[in-house]
Length: 78
Figure 1 (tube, helix red, strand yellow):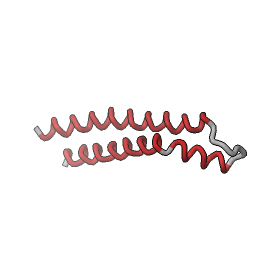
Figure 2: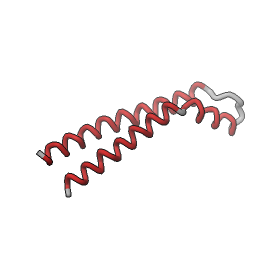
Figure 3: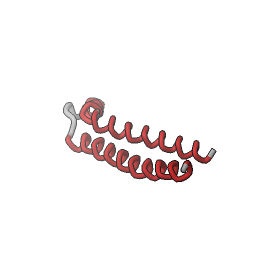
Figure 4: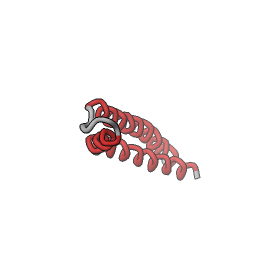
């Protein structure tokens, strides 16, 4: 049962990593959507950087904790 818990944790961190990847890929589109809702017609570089840096942070956290969970699964299995 404990192995299943850690395996689900690894799957969750894979999802977080993919979310970060999506944030980086779609940062320009999302920044322009925010700009259209605001008073500017063009997206600012700052808005796009926020999405890119947030995506990288999501990926970094997911890789670190996903690695820890994967090692935990391997230790429990073997």
